[in-house]
Length: 340
Image 1 (cartoon, helix red, strand yellow):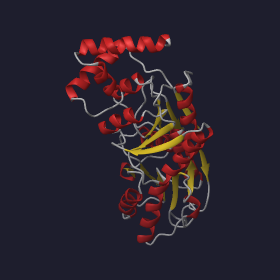
Image 2 (cartoon, one colour):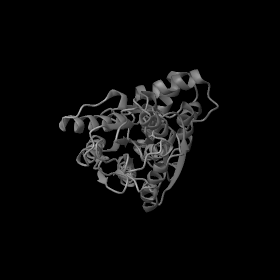
Image 3 (cartoon, helix red, strand yellow):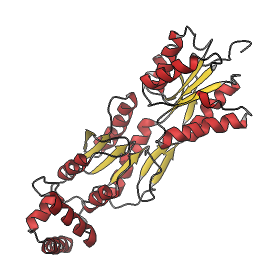
Image 4 (spheres, one colour):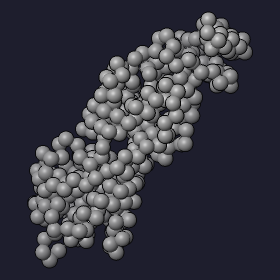
């Protein structure tokens, strides 16, 4: 018997003794089994954390899977993330399991029970954060985790991969200013997400550097979906002092802006310029082809999966990685109409 196995057995025995339960009950808690009363589970979890118990990585029963967790799976950009994680997993003879759970702030509690039972190689979470108790339980089972584009400012002990959202916001807005636009609107993402706020900050910075005022009525928080872009753009374009350009915080929202422009009888880009964000596969096929900020979604997912496997192997990669963004100019932007 290896010394580390013997230590683990002793630790489990100590936990069982202190919790007043059997070793098999402690084992059930470790494996995410449901047939343990909630008060007992909580008591055992506290003791496992107190003893600093860590399951040996690569122990028997570990599934050769990377778990990719979304709060929703109906966005085009999700496919790019899936392809990125899948490519890395395949190169390491592993598979990918997709899970939809919780909100953009954290997966649901039912997910934690499930992942402890599945015991994957590691977990990649999208647009999320992890409550302290989730982190403790994953670490005690030696299940590493990485967050892609975290919803909030990630804590120093949480590995994450993101992109240069502020720079992307600056680039999109500066392009519109260089085209000659002065009355520019923005429909960013939800107001409780870090990437949304960073893109808005980039917009404000570019406007400020150009000496242009930001009209509060031309700033809206969307939801990164077509409907949100359509709804906000419909209202903005109905104003007598409508904007001549709109920066949408996602390509899906930009598609909604294009439809709102059509409803108002406006031609893009002759009457209205539109810039999106993400550069998803549909962007070049929009009508007109969408000028957008390229976010390296697949590369972000690849980096997150590589970071996850490095953590599993006991390495210490950087806890925060930020990839660059770039502007892709197509057909949806042009100088504003004369006299506007």
